[in-house]
Structure formats: structure tokens, C-alpha cells
Length: 155
Image (tube, rainbow, N blue to C red; front, side, top):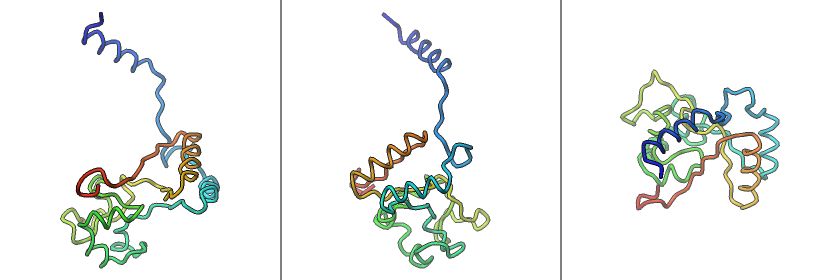
């Protein structure tokens, strides 16, 4: 019988000896090229979105939503859940791009992608999910699933 201490020690040894494998990220040499992303977009019938933080319109007018619209709706989870490029709680993106009416706003921080994904597949079919999953797996890329309905607040 293996004790908890022995189990912990053997787990730590296994972790230490394991071949480290990290997922690719935008700063890696193995990050997909623009051509790769364009191929994925065609393979998913145009479902690929290059992430642009929704509050970016408050910094450089680079968003489909006006800054006034963003500020009016910023504190509503329905607003964020309706946008593939947003998350229910933007603070998890390290306050990297919040509008001026948010308490975490700091003009000096500007607007960056922060913790948001660089690209999104706005999948509406099983085939799009399968293509995107296979594509990401072949390139050792992390997949993050955005969903709603996990609690009574629609997160």
C-alpha cells in the first residue's frame, strides 16, 4: 500500500521526469502563419475571428461597437455573452482593455489583447468544431470553449 506521502513523492518525481510540453502561443516560432489561419477560416466556412477587444472602440475606434454602446452595456453579462470576442468577466483578461466607465480603467494601460485568445472560431456546426479541434491539435494549440448557462447569471 502506498502512503499519501509516497504517492505525492512518486507523483512529483514523475512530473519532474516527464517530457515538458507546452501549448503554442503567439510568441512561439511554431505559431501558425497568416496563411495557416486563412486556411482554417476557409475550412470552417468563414467562422474564424481575429480577436479585437470589444472596448477597443474607446481607445482607437477599432471595434464594431461604439464606445458609447460598450459603456452602456459593459456591466451586463448578456452583452458579453453575445460577443464571441468577449468574456463574461473581463477582469480575467487582466483589465487589458476596459472602457472609461469601468472602475479598473487606466488610460495609461491602453488597450491590449491581454488574456483573451488571439483567434476565435465562432462555431455553429459540429463540422466546424471538428475541423477547428483537429487543426488546433495538429499544431499543439490550446482550445478554450466559451459557453453560457453554467449558472443562474448566464455565465
